[in-house]
Image (cartoon, rainbow, N blue to C red; front, side):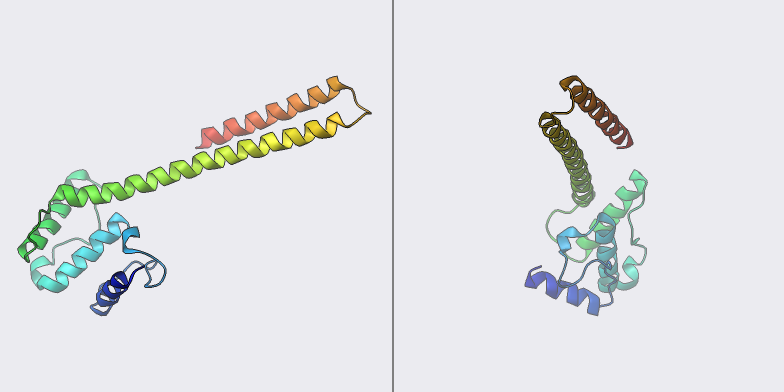
Length: 167
């Protein structure tokens, strides 16, 4: 976290804004705020600046799309009313929260994909180890070795199918 973020977080805390517990001055970035946390911090900050004029701002994002639109539009309107000159609308606030949600979903999918890949590689490694062991075993026939390898491969395929169905 850079110095500007540390100063901002410190100022927000000293002003009485409740920050998410995982956001500390030394370990996290403001960019990592969830959409709900971002709306909460904005609403609390606007309440401090405007007082009773922004008391109706919610501190969380509702589930319904129409309500989310209203919350983001209300927050944008309060920012405009205190002098923010650049373009600020529901779509910009919503796009930012949707972007964060999309990033989270994308990371979860990539992680799951890597887990499946690793499990497949581990299974392949185990089969190769067994094949090498059988190849150097003079006491068993090739047919028996192939049968054992096929059984192991089928069992591992079944496990992978079960994992994919759970995902």
